[in-house]
Length: 493
Ligand code: ADP
Image 1: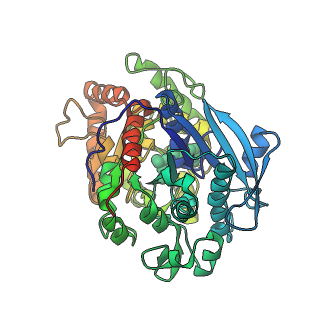
Image 2: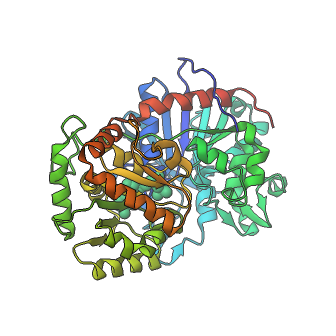
Image 3: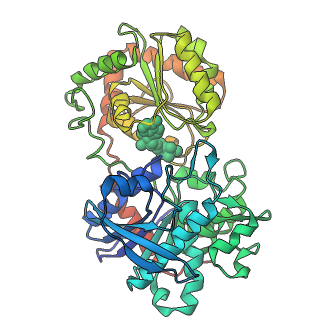
């Protein structure tokens, strides 16, 4: 992996992002937050940024972007409707493709993933490039994110040979989660409109299937992921999700940049979603937020131990099963637990059972609720994040900003962003770590947390450290500019 990105210059760069989520328009996880905040931060640095997003039904209904431009596909016989919006100085283009995005859900519904996702996101990539070509908009950088926009680099590679206007356009591909690869039946290759040779071993073919993410890795000029530690982990068999060989092959073009947070949206001093405002200098009102959250969720107000919160997709990755497995011991330690999240049925069921087995001590809100998530971070003493793997993680950054100390497994972005020294706690600590994904290890850390919680001076010092940690995007965006500059220079292959 590459460790440095070189020096940034002040010259404005024309950057176009292609992504499947962008807060506040469409968000299901961290990707949405990143695309909502990184483009405006680049804009504040003087760069010109535009974002392409699918024209999901919910976005069209809520934001009413007016009448669309009609655009013909430059790769095949198809048409698009391109709508326009603005977000914090960034132009947003919504790609409508027949009825492919005009449905409830981004990637699937209660029955699972949409069966035509290969066609949907192949059309999204083709539609975005077709619109750029029609507008004669050839930015210096096209920055794509995850499998949903991973066809852009291969499409562009072949387009460059036929159309020299594209030859000055460089591509960056960012992996937010290597486990979601966009893997489909080989017959779906027809939707990509790529030449047959692109379906070879050194192309999008993967164990006989079509793999969008592999195309993004192989055909981009540089690629990145969302923490330095995860960039290292992606090279290994344990965390490489089967693509480690491909990642290793291109490791000289791989960079890791830890995510930031939008500190205007996530600010306990001005947050409209929380019942009382507080700061690191005046943290007193956090107690009122805690009491309000306990009341809202039906938790006992007089619990002695820390209030632990979880805000998460309920997916295997997030390690929620470790919390369920140790529930009795956690109760024995005197902690309370509040969980906000939706996802896998067995986890939802386990949490609902725990809540009814421990009334007043365990609460489960099976919902996706942006405003409640703010109240959870504001009211919680501890955020639990026992992830099996975590490319970056944003929740721990939000929790720190709101004075909830993160208790995380030492992996990926969690290891990079939460400072925890061996006992006794050092002056710089912002949270707690554990290593092995084992009940005993998890509980040992929890016991330590309960002890430190009783030492008020130490707890307050850690809260202050966590709240004062600067994780804003304005500090992170210059690293992406360095990455773009790297992409604009020829890379080893
Ligand atoms: P991932 O992208 O893997 O889901 P991240 O930690 O990077 O994990 O980002 C998760 C984002 O989704 C955070 O902004 C978090 O607050 C939000 N989130 C997750 N679950 C919920 C929920 N049930 N309600 C509201 N927000 C949620």
